[in-house]
Each structure stands twice: as C-alpha cells, then as structure tokens.
Image (cartoon, rainbow, N blue to C red):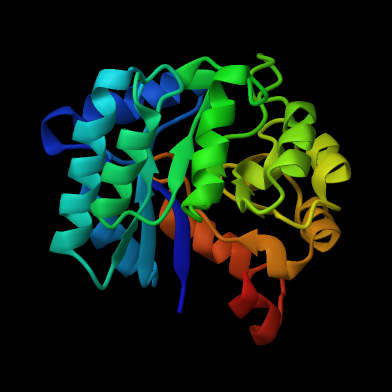
Length: 251
C-alpha cells in the first residue's frame, strides 16, 4: 500500500486559485488544480492508495469552515482520505477549535508558520501544542524556509523537548531548503518524524538516501505535496531509490 502523507485540497470554486497562489509563494511550478477529484484521479493512476489531506487557515475565522470541508471530503471518501485539521494561534478559543476538530473525526493538525506568520516557538503557539498533546493529536508542521525565520528548525528543538509526548511530523525532510541542516539538528528527537514532500526536485538520490538514513526509515513518511508536483513522478523517484520491500513499506 502506498500512502501519500502530504496533500493539500481546496473547495472546487477556489481550488485552482489557491493552488497556484501557493506555487507563487515558493516561486515553484504547480502541477494540478488542488481539487479532490484531481487528487483521487491522478493518485490512483500513480498507484497511491490513501491520502492524508489538509489545508491551512490564514485567519482564525477560516478554521471551522476549513475543518468542516476536510471532514466532509473524508466522509465522502472514507477508504481513501485521512484528514488533518487546521488551527490558528490567534484564535480566541483554541480549546473549542480543537474539540470541534476532534468531533469531526480529524486525526491531527497541520500548521504552516510561514503562511500563518508565527514562529514555531512563539508563545501564542504553546496552547496549541499543549492541546495537541492533551488530545493526542499528531502535528504536521511546515518546517524550513531559508527566506524566513518563522519555521527555522532551530525553533523546534525546545518545543520537542517540552512537549515530548506530542508527535510532530516535519514536512519536507524537516526543513524545506534547509534539508541538511534540519536533519543534523532534529534526527535525534524521538518524537519527531519527517515527510519527503517537496524535496526530491532539489536533492540527488545519494543525498535523499543519506537524509533518510539519518532519521531512519521508521521515521520517514512518503508525501507528494499535491498539487505542487506530478504525483506519478514523485512515486517513481522514490521507487528508484532502491529500497527493499521492508524498508519501503515502513516509509
């Protein structure tokens, strides 16, 4: 079974605009339109069986509507989609947001410091981490961007130490555009996992294998960052790395 652990989806009426806006933010091409139907179609063609889907609230007012959208799509495709919710550090009632997220059946939280404009160790986020630990919700974090300081992997170290029961997945090998630095900083944190999304385009096969070895195959997840990259190409690139079935299945 192939699970894509990092997919962004949007309502059809705004999907194409939202998808290409993200591409412009990173000055990178966007392959698809961000619709759920496209994800399911192209993912199936690439041999992907399940998808972890999420979206990010840029304001507190968006939190509930985004979480309800994700939950509705998961309910429509329960055997294929697994949903993560969103939170915003400026929410007036984070506990209520988390309780709604859990009641909707969402299995974790996605945060994006660079887009939501908070630092990973910002005091505003401590309540989020506290609640995620309390409710046993894993957190998928966008980590790393050499243009900004918000998601610098250095800022994650005290959070992982303080909230050591909270499972954190650092997207993009733990530090987009800072892959090597992040792996040296964070590989020894046992509550920290990574996905490989939006990294293959910039790294050689040898460097990818080196970073995976540093974290260990038990702590690496496969992800395509849909709608950014061609999902078939991402699957084939991973398969070309030469992992045996046991290690590939773990990832």
